[in-house]
Amino acid sequence: MVTGPGQVEIADVPEPTAGPRDILVRPRACGVCGSDGFYISIGGIPPRQGATILGHEAAGEVVEVGAEVEGVSVGDHVVVNPMAEPTGIIGNGGASGALAELLVLHDAVAGKSFAVVPKDLPWEVAALNEPMAVARHAVNRANPKAGDKVVVFGAGPIGLGAAIGFKSLGASHVVVVDVVASRLERALAIGADAVINSAEEDVRERLLELHGETGGGYHGTKPGTDIYLDAAGVPSVIDTVLANAKHGATLSIPAVHKKPVEVDFGALLTSEITIVMAMGYPTEIFEVTEDIIANQDKYAKIISHPVPFEDVLEGIKLASTPGAADKVVITMG
Image 1 (cartoon, one colour):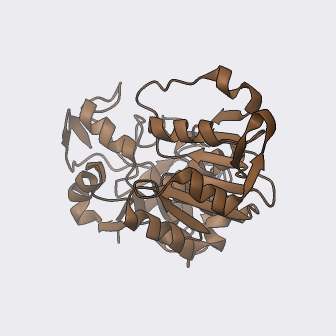
Image 2 (tube, rainbow, N blue to C red):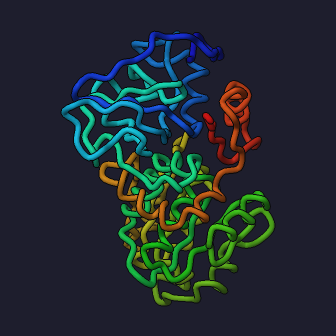
């Protein structure tokens, strides 16, 4: 629980109970999101500043099912949609959070509040469902077609999830760009066709080699990349994409840019580039679940630091320290 600016503690709260339309879940794994560090820095989210329970990337075991709830049984393993909770977004200022021993899903509906997953799916992999839905929404916003050539900037969890998503939807070649060698190694491990270290290599020249040349005339010669995805959130990525995008290319931006980015629309006119923003997961929260189940070995490689709940405070600190960890998932027995 966030108890004040920069303060997070393990606290005792009343044990939740489930009504006839609810289910009670025992969280078994919960990812730590970058937003959690932000909530800690500001002392929690109104109206629960000083008492914000963390955790929204949850997978758990059902321990009680209300009499009116269908499609789930005690003992089932589920992934959770934090946005569907009527008492407020789970772990994002709502009345509950998943970094807890018990979690109630009120007015629980299968396919809306939760989805049942196979019992052999590792808890920590199942807990990737929520952030991978964010990645899948960014992929969907790019409207990929079979055979597309794709570049993903940023090999953090969202970028890697997007890379897997593009491959699952039929992309012929996916390149991941980053400046950290270990992240690029992980990108290759999850199935990227190639990687580029932009601190050491010329991105344009490498893309011309990997995706061929296209254009000519007033478009100029450009790499044959169809889709770019910005999961890095730095201005240099936007500059690189807009300078090299071929006619009709698409740029999807799920990254949070903390500073304004200057764009010369006059220079972009002839490219007819499509730029789309991507936030959250309007429809993807359980769309991505089947892909995680089918490609669980790839998704498992996204997790850099599984941390047991007894070390949860250290895990949160680790996740909030820039460059210290790529993806922290807290495991609860």
